[in-house]
Length: 102
Image 1 (cartoon, rainbow, N blue to C red):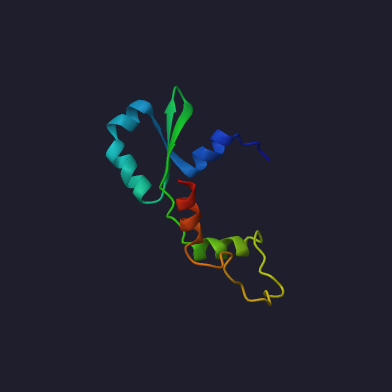
Image 2: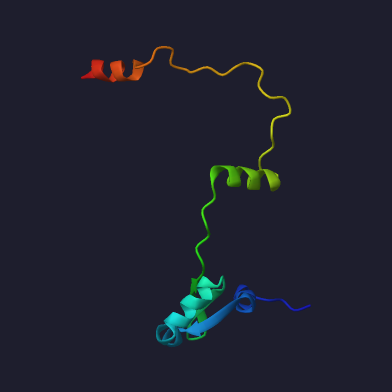
């Protein structure tokens, strides 16, 4: 079994362009990135940059479901029995407090 370096693993997953090639073929690189591919830019054979698609933002519900699926969030076994109530008992209390500080 061969030991691959981090760079070797990136080479398998991405296209590699030298800095000169990246400059002259930028439109081609953007087409690849829009298609979902990762592109590496190298300088003297060493990777210096990675161009990759931007991940789409998750909604709160999507993130919650993903974290639950990964086992990072666990739903409660017994839902809370007591009805939740607001901490502030009278509306506008914060506004009155801030006004009293002036």
